[in-house]
Image (cartoon, rainbow, N blue to C red):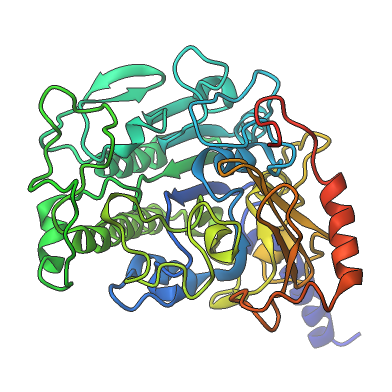
Length: 462
């Protein structure tokens, strides 16, 4: 064989050996960032025109942006419970808002990754268990925790205390913006020397009411928006003296809620950009999967104005609705060298798929009986099998249900109400109820609805 041919074979063999070494490691570091009540249309990469989110837009350019990703529920607590457990709201223990802890028997993605050798942290809003309960973060797989543990406390963007590893720690309510503290803690965790891969679950309380933000972020927006009076507004960012952390009958938002709303999101976006730069500085880009999601659709409490900002991106509904605007949320993922840059995917998936996805990527185990399925191929921009049926139920207004089967979306507005039916491929804004014209689809949906759930003693069907 000619020498040139032999050398060619050797080069090809060496390339085959080296190729896996140039790819991302089989056990990536994972950063999951979740916003609070951020709607589908509240990032500029999803169509927001009133302000820009360059940090998240960068992640979208360098990774993949999903256009049909769903939260676990249309309100916070059950959505976060679905995310942690891999169960949808027909099976998860927590199916409504309130201070309900995860149970001892509930297995979380944090527990699974910790068992697989990951160092784990939850920073920001937890909402699934306060100190001493079975849902305390370190009992649910998060060796380090810092932030807010209950939902009422999370209404305060300035407070006099947070929790570190379930121990109360004082903070300055006159100057410490809690989301700034969350970013600093996240950066410290990333920089902590440790040979193990890490899983960081970072939860900002943005843009949930109350709408409050430091002046340096508010100033550029103060005169940009026509404001409407807000009865519960305050003129500055300081807590009410003597009760800095108690929830009031309303939200103590600032007097310019539209400007504050825009400033809150852009400040969070700036901080996510800071963390992205930190990964690059430390050479962690290729070994880190960073993902951004929201826990449900946009809210209107505390002076928020989802109509003005087109917060649902044209989708029908907002928070507390099971129409698309209440549950479809942004999803951006970047993993340099593994996720092809500049991808846009319409593959439908949801919060309960996060657990099995992370389990596959990390080599961790997934409990039997989860509703989620790994979407690792979808993340990489590859062909991905989908769910035959997706399911949500909501108990805050009695009992409502929603399901998706292919491009068909069904919604039941009350226990005994007839199903509404929409074809999302031709009617993404759910304007034309086509139930009467599609009895065979309705029959299949009804069959799915009967088998998709189990009864819950905590949230009985009313």
